[in-house]
Length: 248
Image (cartoon, rainbow, N blue to C red; front, top):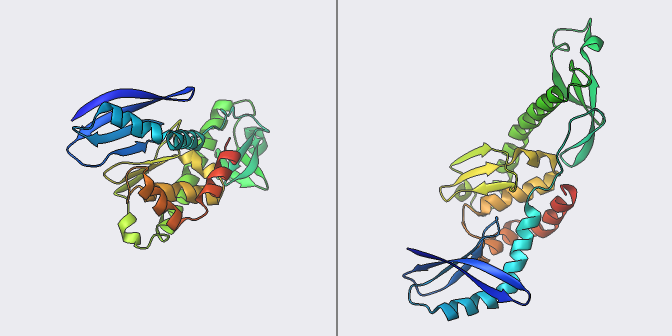
């Protein structure tokens, strides 16, 4: 297998792509979530003909790159101080700290550091008001536990969107923080979801989950992939736009 790095000009922009040659008849162009453009071409295809095909699809390529760029998490860093707002299922909750001295006389359960949702607040109990490290630790633990419940639940529900749900059963599912991705699916069917996704509205979570489930059927981002995504989730573009707006 031969790999080449090439590029074409399109107006004032330059589109780089990775060229892979194989023993095949047709040429395939895909755009990966990280923006990489992959071109799989017949082994004897002329470089000029390949470049012409890439240039012809340039508008589509740039649109896909822009789409995937906006799909990546853009939430600014949190500093975990009282009063700071955090999203959960698309709704804002402010941090409220109940320090240890306010817990005196309470039951053993209430004296243990914990986080609970209380009428629009993420209440962190038995932690010092200025201990941002501890506040961050317990809030992140709370989010991870909620992500385990919510994301796995939505995974099972969104499998039912497909004509044959049995064909979209991941080999494995795990949560992992990813700075530039909400989710990913490996060729072997291993699905990874970013636990921060639990901060988004439910319909946006469903969009990301469904997007990744589609990859169990179509591994690339070609025309067939988007046809399947539109079939199982006709309003995916609206959901995607809301995800970008809420999580910007």
